[in-house]
Image (cartoon, rainbow, N blue to C red; front, side, top):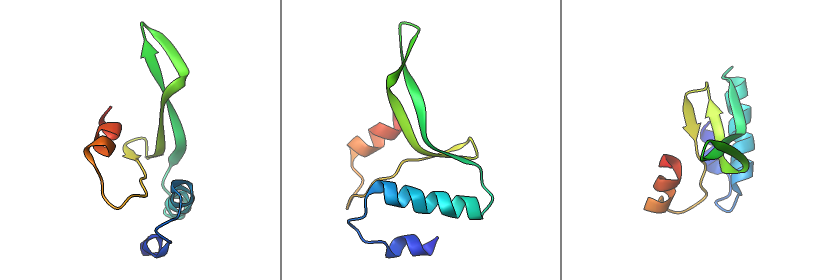
Length: 81
């Protein structure tokens, strides 16, 4: 996976996602891309208004991709919410 570091810093998240998906596949890992998490309001599932997980690996690990110079508290809150 060290080749990911060679990608241009301006590469969009979707390109990193595609590369990681390829690497996970080569390792024989199960994963889902852009897994939908519905917003639940008053017991109503609002699929279109929910969140998306960039990559869910082995149904246990959430991978949230960011193409930024530094992770901020806003990015951390996005993963925790």
